[in-house]
Amino acid sequence: MIRAVASFVVAAMFAACQTVAPVKDASLADVQVVTSPGGVTAWLVSEPHVPIIAMEMAWRGGSTNEARGRDGAGWVMSYMMNEGAGDLDTRAYGGRMQDLNMEFACGVWIDWTNCSMTTLKETASESFGMVQMALEELRFDREPFDRAKRELTVALKRSEANPRTLATRAMDDALIRGHPYARYATPETVDRISRADIKTLKNTLMTKDRLLVVVVGDITAAELAPKLDEMFGALPAGAALSPLADAVARPPTEEPVVKLLQQPQTLVMFSGPGVRREDPDFFAAYLLNYILGGGGGISSRLADDLREKRGLTYGVATGLNLQTHFWRWTGSTSTQNEKADEVMALIRENIERLGRKGPTQKELDDAKAYVTGAFPLAFDSNASIARNLLGFWQDNLSADYVHQRNSYYEAVTLDDAKRVAGKYLKAEAFTFVMVGQPTLE
Image (cartoon, rainbow, N blue to C red; front, top):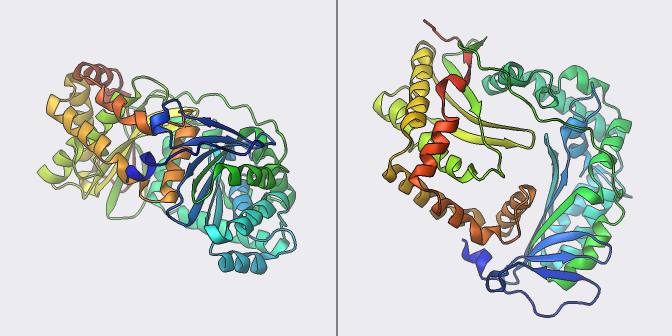
């Protein structure tokens, strides 16, 4: 609940060895910005009532920094992060985590590298030590390394018959062929990955200068500050990332891109121009997305038309894709092969109508009520609070954004929504991809 975030009280006194900066509005200062003696900064929500501590870590930079022809190295690296460190091999490291009732996992995505940890208060010091060990003394043993490559290779081969994987790759090829965002791992690239590759990648991605840390739970700022230096102090100070330009989409094709796959349904994916997260129009676009197809696939114009009115699909959903260097308005649905052409035409009609006329006042009010009313549900545990706060930080938002967020949506007027709809929602600007055996006229 939002109350779990908004009711925290910032301590008045802190140890002299740390810096604590409250957020702007002291009456809502539940997020403390803690800087360790060694200069590591974290956002902290101190909650003593639940004896669990959740930590989210993120580094700017992801799979686009994999060596050319070694795509998949980030996945293998993240797999290795809890496969043994220091004096503990895979079995011993996993057993120790189990003994401590802690969870620790990492992932490498296109733009970010992330790790998550949860632990009990009573075993927190030892759990922090396990994370420190993984960051400082990762073993890269041969057996788990080979196992990681085998598992990834099997998954990649299975994905070759996955409609969503095929559609995503076809869309990337149609829009941004040649850009690093359009790269993907194959069994051949995975086979080339060496342990030296993932060691190099880890030291490139996991550096102190690009680290973000969020901690939520039963820990004070005075307790956290020295732990930050213990866990992250030995990371490389910095490393150069591969330069990455914004992806510029090619013009949309008039006809859909079709990938044949023997199955009774066709997956229909579509993508059009989107809005940057930092653009003031983002909030209006977010509400418009809910109106078009963002209501969980159940309540939206597209769901009403395709599902409720015509029975053409079980669900349809749209979203704003907000990658650092590519931002798009996207959506997808599945339907019978012989109905794919009709579904595509109806999606185009709905996009065009909303773009031309904009939403009604009732639609806008309903979208605001849902978007603001559902927000507290994202804060139902220490882990979810930490994940959401990290997301705000990754979007370059302030620590007190949690208290400001709903006001930005409430401020969107009907004129704003109509203007933004007219700017972005043009049917001819959307590219469509179909995977299946669609019957097209």
